[in-house]
Image (cartoon, rainbow, N blue to C red; front, side, top):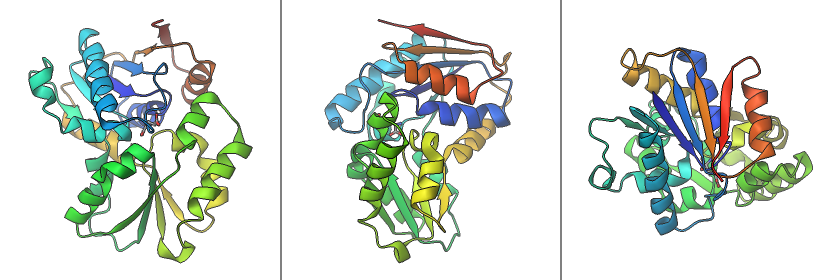
Length: 252
Ligand code: DGL
């Protein structure tokens, strides 16, 4: 069973891409809606929440982990294997598969993400390893606004304000470095006309298939756990998985 972890609804976009290429997996998903958004939290807080999230997934039967949260990527370089009974449980995160997808590309890349992700420098460093410089900028309010369902007008304002810092001729492709952002893909398209918009979810899903097939074989079932009630989470899950049977358990 694959354990998927995010601060809330963002990981649903990654799960959707995983299901598209690898339908037979069983998934236990933990969305930490009580502590979302993560992107404004300190490195210490994120490390603690990451350990607790992954511990929860292991206790609920996960035999592989997908961290569908960019904001905690820096915490994953911690010695998680020292702190948690991970054994031989593989851990797949967002940054590596995303950056690998640009090997050999000549496109100029801008990356938008949460404050935590941008400040961690994880993407910048990983892109440098393949010889690419990226312009990274934060959209501080956006993930939280999506969790709360503030609406398209607010999303557009946040995106336009952040994009104004990036000269339009500086990039060919805009990478969505936060898994919440594809939930408002249409708004990004409106705000960045003429740019290719890249959602890393597909690259992560390919990595999952490549690394975990055929070891992870199940019946296609999904159990969602959220740490506090969230109408938004339920709405996004219904939108992305209209035909799927799944359970949602609220933990508090
Ligand atoms: N969706 C997560 C990410 O990719 C977390 C966003 C947040 O909670 O601020 O970074």
